[in-house]
Image (cartoon, one colour):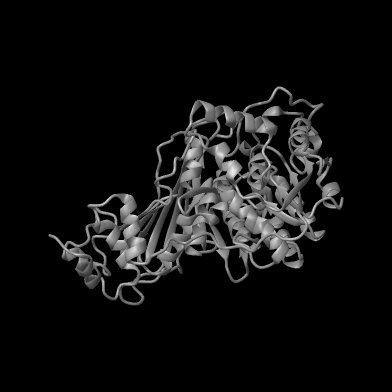
Length: 532
């Protein structure tokens, strides 16, 4: 069958936005780039760009970094500060492979009105690296032994908190209570009690809190939100999202540095509220493997997937969570699971329906994770009328039993095996992915996004939004409300795994439904045995 664009539009009468969606699948005679152009130019459907932010005017924002480990160094690069060691490593990589673009991308990154003025890291080697790399004639980076000293020093307007999880909330609360803006990595808190205290501190402070879920700046996720809001998928009843890793880095077995000794690390300060144990290099560098410092798969990786779907669906905290799993792939002394299966129930959730009122209502969110297999499983949103595969790219298929598209399916103008819509904002941009783990982060929108065909660090966009807000005010895309949803959901998951039972949320009382005789925070921290 041959048909024209006019036939296509006539057949789609009365279906909002679906002209663009269907035209993408029908235009199978043109390349993907021309297909995308046909959507944008002929049907005027524009992918959602990251929200515009006001400029960061006035005196430079003075920023302090608390924790200069793996994530702290990445955040500093997003601010425009790269260590001498990284710059040389990237230079050599570009010499070896002309398509390696990370150094070029960094140099082309827009400059922010920021001064990195202070560092607080309990490991001497890391603190020295910051001072040596980022100090200049205008600004000499000052090292502080404690975060309290930094916050009260007058040297910083804002702090970035990239520490182990058990330090996130205490540091963020102290900053906010002293009028210092805070950017805190996920999960926002380590315990339930901290979650409420941080929410109170954020609401009572004039300073801005931003939680580090940078995928909220990614084009495909913002575009997906628009598509869901316009009813393209119909009622979404099932979401499936996954973590798939199969290497040491992905399982948190990071390199143990020779320079790390009791003389170069303030071990007591690292422990904080954690159980007192002798100096242990394995715990210091690989802290994510223990509940005492980290939050396991539920807090470290599930939070990525939960929040990126929450920004698309705005589903909030689930009514109940059931989780199971175990330590099945890395029996190396860790006490957090390396395989996890989570079911979240949203019985009152709806994305709208193309069927009769009352027939469709409710959704299950399934998270499945293994650190022992790297087979890539996509994120899938399953609706009555369509299915969306969501990553840095976006693809939608019509459902063969769709009510909304029944006439088009019958006329063979739609085919369940052919995508209605495909969106790849970086189709012509080299990805320069260096490992399976970095591909995992890229597919979840956690490394970069694309604006007008150019690759942009999504962490840079997230930090830029936060910094702009410190000068101009307004709401941030991932503040205390979004962080509260994320933290509570992660803690409910951890509790369900440890207790081996369903955990319920009371939306009216805004609390996890109590279980007689159980202290939830003691369970989360591993100081209370699970129920038998």
